[in-house]
Amino acid sequence: MRPASGGTRPSARRRALGQHFLVDVRAVARIVAALDPRSGDPVLEIGAGRGALTERLLAAAGRVAAVEVDRRLAAALRARHAPESLALFEGDVLRLDLSEVARALGHPASTPLLVVGNLPYSLSKPIVQRLVRERARVARAVLMFQREVAARLTAAPGGASYGPFGILAGQFFEIEPLFDLAPAAFRPPPAVHSRVTRWIPRPSAPSAECERRLRSCLAACFAGRRKTVRNNLRAALGERQADALLDAAGVDGGLRAEDLGPPTFVRLAATWPAGAGR
Image (cartoon, rainbow, N blue to C red; front, side, top):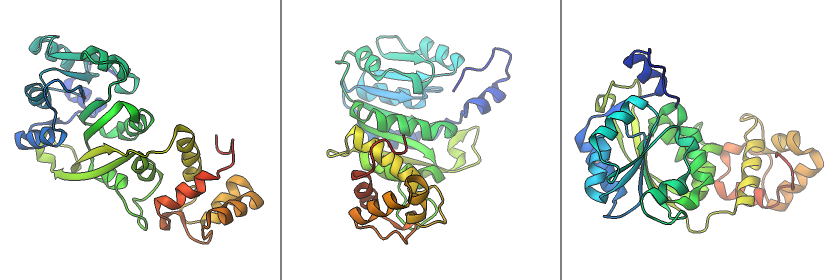
């Protein structure tokens, strides 16, 4: 999400930034309805682009914050909306200070935000990782992904889409697939379909230390998808420690990681050795 140089052609700049602008007005209305912002709610739009969602969000919330990396689009948004209505942050969303966003909207720095956006496909995973890390700052979210990425976030055990990405996110958010959009809903049309999802924070999410252990555990268990959990853990921890971990958690080490449900990984992570996988 870096701004392109001034000499780059618009079409090339859009490709570099992963820009596909939503033009389906019915989809825009459905996304805003799913987020359900009320007047005065602290709303953050990721990638405001040409402002299709921004207009609807402003109508519902009254004042909105948005982040946009493309300086030309940011300039157009500033020309169209007064600072009193749109608090615009120009730059990379991965470096955005969410406390500053809340303050810009007139709320205390720790206020959780309503987050919405058509995410750049190439940055979906790091944005999700950022939301997981800063989950206390998210009240709810409605996010659009490439359909295959969304499938990974909501996949059940037993398939190729199931893995650490979705398991980890699912421990902190209830992720609900809402509807799909065909390429024709965007300009220029992407080569893939998209899926809109709603994210609601789980009230009993793991602590930061449990999250660290779970990340390490998942990375080890899925290191070789064709290998058994026992073999993957032995490679990461050594035979004795791996076997003791499996016994303590009551896990059949002869299974593959893709066949184990999320609660099993939570049990394994609960006794994950301190310092392992850091």
